[in-house]
Length: 231
Image (cartoon, rainbow, N blue to C red; front, side, top):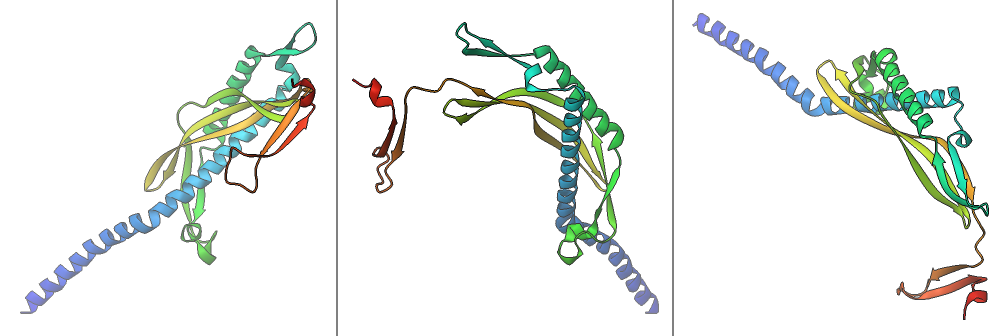
């Protein structure tokens, strides 16, 4: 009888040893792990964005990049701007230098562990406190850099021209119990200028009626000189 009781206690003890770790792992995966991953992703993305912006600013300053030395205006005989011409060779060199610099910064300086306090995951009054969960940021894949032109109206006869560079970085966020692959894209303005054109001889501003639901009805037509060119 005593042997049976001891055997039953032993079975219960073994069952507890099996059930408790499984239950703890399940609860951790369901409730804690998503918050830990979200916090790690957020921190890693902030670090990557900082690296990208810092590298681009350093390269632009070192290469003395300005709008005037990468964009040239092609003008007509009358002096009107006919086209914009960018220095493609210099832009390609800049793109290569920026990609290489970001790659080395991620590979050498930031391939290291940083910690996320456990309180940051749970939130509340314990935010920023508690033992740290180790996280490692590792750069994976190539750094892709591309230049693009952006035009925006800056007035009746003015256009703001920006030369933007879009950088895309792929990296892995490594946790002790999980690994995630992330991609960050950041846009930085390399140079900009306001292009001033001719002042138009006529300008008309048509406003929709404020007291009617009919969008085809004009409430007010503000005419600046257009009447001189009508019938």
